[in-house]
Length: 295
Ligand SMILES: [Fe+2]
Image (cartoon, rainbow, N blue to C red; front, side, top):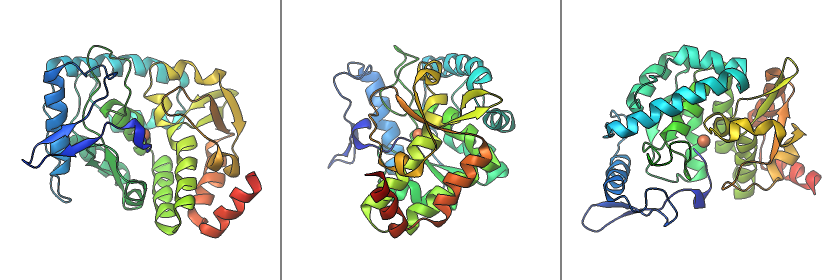
């Protein structure tokens, strides 16, 4: 999931118990009352969810399953060209359905035997500390709705395509899953909001938008790139910088546009050493020093 507040449509629980997702006027589904009713119902499922129970199934239409099938097919073609070998191994291990949207409970069922990760439904924005903290326990907060069918290759918000194709395929890798867990441990360890923000930015520039050199080519492992039909074709032309913690933790990003600054690891081992090592040991003091060194 993306972690910035403005990216998520606000979700409001009404006094009568109903739930309303407030889509912006620019959202492709804004004027589609049937879609909006479904978004409200799906958000209500997440708000009513209790840990330890199966995630309730979301109702998707045939049209929405077709969106998944189309995007899934097109992304698979691009993944073969642009995704890291470790991510592609995750795709093969997980075996997501290609023709219909999997329910989150089903995703958990595929993932848990591989790396122990399970999905949790999120109605919208999850506070940073909760979102990252539970990664340490092998839980991943995920939205459950899918983008509007009128624009199958575009979404203004993180939808189930992003959460599942982007993240679950990565979480099916032992090595990437270990990094997600370390990010969670780091988020639990730090106390200050600035330090938490720093941890989340390092996550953003790696597990969301990370790229890596592999046999002389730049390939992506970040879920944000690998779930974006347009962005995946563009990342090699962006401003590619070395994998430096102080820079990643302090560089500003705009979630509403393609990411034009990316940080490249030289290898998976390099990513594990620099970023995994950071998350494994960081605290408020070490992060304060990194922030001071970036000024
Ligand atoms: Fe994400």
